Length: 395
Ligand SMILES: Cc1cc2nc3c(=O)[nH]c(=O)nc-3n(C[C@H](O)[C@H](O)[C@H](O)COP(=O)(O)OP(=O)(O)OC[C@H]3O[C@@H](n4cnc5c(N)ncnc54)[C@H](O)[C@@H]3O)c2cc1C
Image 1 (cartoon, helix red, strand yellow):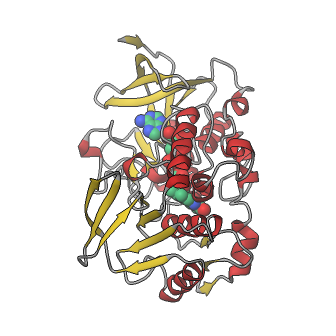
Image 2 (cartoon, rainbow, N blue to C red):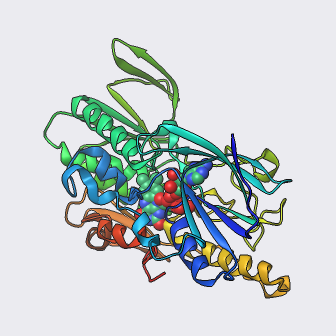
C-alpha cells in the first residue's frame, strides 16, 4: 500500500456525477487558496442515466452506441492548477475517520484495479450515489467502458428474449416497459410489468399511476398489480418466476427495476441509517463525525432525484466553507425537502407519458415534449463539464 501524506488542507470529494461535479466546481471557485480538492471517481465520463430505459432497450437510440450518454468530465477541470485540484480514477474502499484518512483503490477504464492509496482529508464529502439492483446499468457500474459493455450485454439479451418480466413499477420500471413495448411492438415479444402496489407508480397519486397503466396496456404490456417475485429459479435456460399470488411466469429475461442501493459499503456502519444512506442533519453534515458531509443519492434524505441534488450540494458547499471559516452554526444553511415534480415518459411516442407537478397531473403531450423525445440527453455534455445542473440551471 502506498501512502499519500497530505500536509495541505484538503477536501476529498468522493463521486463525480450529478452531485459531485457541480459541487467540485463550486468549491474550487470559493475555497481558501491554500486548500486542495481531490475528486475520486471510477469513471472519467458521466453516464446520462436519465435515459437508461431507452439506452438499455436498444443500441444506437441517440447516437452510435449511445455515446452521447457518456460525455467526458475531465476537460471541465482543465483550468485548475495541479496544486488546487487532483482527479483520482478509483473508488473509496475503506474509511478511517479517527485518522481522517480514506482508502482509495485506483482503476483504469477497463476496470483493472491499480494502486491502493491512503488519502488524508480535512473534510470528506460523500457523493457516491447509488447503484441499481443486481448491478443493472440503470446507474453506472464502474468506468464508462464497463457500463457500456454491460449495456451491450443487455441489448443481446433483450433482442433474444421472447418474454421479458420487469419487476418494480416505479418510474424506472414504467419507463423501461414503455420503451421496450414501443420498440418491439408487433415483434411478438411479451412484456410484463409487476407492481407490488395496487397500480404502477404507487409512490405518487392514484390517477397518475392509473394513467400510466392505461398507456402501457395500449402498447400491449401486461401490467400485474399487487404482486412480487417470491422465487426465481432457472430451467432449460428460462427464468422461472413464482409470483406472490401463486402464478408462475417462464421468462427469458427478468429485469429488476426496484431498489436503488446507496454506494456506501466503504463507510463504517455507525455512519449509516437503516437504508445504508449517510446519516445527516439539516446541514447535510454527518450526525456522527463533524468533518464528513453527504449529498445526493448517498445522503439520508427521502427524495433522491437529480432535481434535489442542487439544493443539497449548495447546502454542503455553504456549510463546508462556513466550517472552514469557523462561522457560527446559526449562520449555516439548512436543507429542506420540498415536493418535486416527476415526469415519466412512456415509450417516446407523441403524448405518451404522465407525471405530477404540484397537484397537477401533467398532460402526456407535455411529458413527451419536455422529456420523452430525448430524456434531456443534450444537456449531458454541459453537466459533465460542470456548467449546468442536471435538473437545469447554471452551476
Ligand atoms: C433509470 C433512472 C432514471 C432517472 N431519471 C431521473 C430523472 O429523470 N430526473 C431526476 O431528477 N432524477 C432521475 N433519476 C435519479 C438520479 O439518477 C439520481 O438522483 C442521481 O443520479 C443522483 O446523483 P448522485 O451524483 O448523487 O449519484 P450518482 O449519479 O449515483 O453518482 C455517484 C457517482 O459516484 C461514483 N461512486 C460510487 N461509489 C464510489 C466510491 N466508493 N468512491 C468514489 N466514487 C464512487 C459512481 O460511479 C458515480 O459516478 C433517475 C434514476 C434512475 C435509476
